[in-house]
Length: 486
Length: 98
Picture 1 (spheres, rainbow over the protein chains, first blue to last red):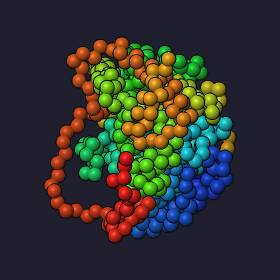
Picture 2: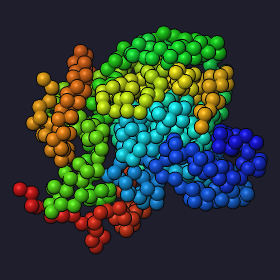
Picture 3: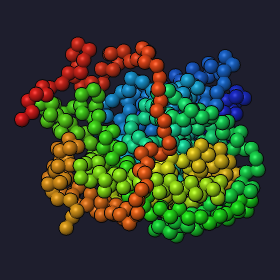
């Protein structure tokens, strides 16, 4: 039998259903793998081996009683910004270091009800603000392909855990690329659903008009399986969409793959400071799409160059408002002082790290009297123009193909002192969050020995379309089967 | 000349309730100025008559009946509080602000 920790969810499901392996054996194998490599990778903030084994035993009992679900007994990892009842949820921040949520996020609750096994909580940039996990208040995660490089971020812990065989699948969150960019940099699959497709209830808020929860996996099929488990309307999130959830796994395999699909290639996504090795790999992937019967259509998304300023004004404005809740009263750190007033200042000064403070400052400025029109309002208007770019594109094409990130994973420390350079690493991912549409990153080659990601973008609720294209690509290539030398 | 003055940085920090160190004020003045300079490219866009997008997708109001439903028991809601008393959050005096 192949090493269990490298199994896909789909293969593990089949083995569990045939009785060839138990969830306890599977979970044990993952825990052993974590103990063997996580001292080097450092993907997890907290590990839950005992709880996981108890959940695995319960899953095995459910299965022997005749029960079955897509994730029954499947070991998974959860980014540490999703609330888990009774399990610490730090958001990678000192201010929530001792926070133990009294409830589950809806996505977590749905997985728990379906009998999933939770191995632990994964590392993230503080409050999911960052592109490398270097802004985690606790430690930086290593990229399994080269431990001196970052795994991307902010869901870098989840991406690294999947790439290193430390879980069968993981969940992350994507506000400006935080699922897709680390997936690209670690050589795994990462899917950002349409805004509202997955309930945000219990996801610690960053940018409320942008945040979405989604899966990171080692195959497109696994991403389809996990998305189906968490998608769907939730009365506890008024922005969750009341649209039926299709059988993504079936729809992904239906029809004739990429044959006849019109795939837009936006010229602006091959221009802005893209590394030569990334462009070569992505263009080779476009050739494969054409070989598989897709019709490549050159398109333009003319407001692409404005995405970074639009995003960083809107996301920081929303973050500065969301993070006002950390006042040391109801939960989280409190620095005690003789007056309440001073306690706010001292608590927030001590509890937040430099990137979070930087974003709170930028967002507060963009919303403040005298600057609101010039920055926040202007960014909102530009966001409308960006949306029109995409609406025009969907009149011509079924989906869009482009790089996920302009570079492969960079060395730790390389961008940490230059926030603008760090922000520019998100140049190909923030657009989808601003327009609320869906996207997926899949491995499509290597540059400089590091994985390169191919991004498919789809319209609102176009998950089946991007999954079908990504699945067809993976059927014809083997990049997703490469494993790092760990 | 950086876009932001030290006084502006201090004013924003006060609005955001952050007790920044002198070194942080200097750093943020330079970094935020550079980011805002970059963001000035938005001024190239003619947005006359363009409505701002407040959300990613069109939203509608969501209503529900105002009914009593199960909620967190007080001890769970208070479990993470730094200080509590008699089923309430306890804070320092708030009327001593000068």
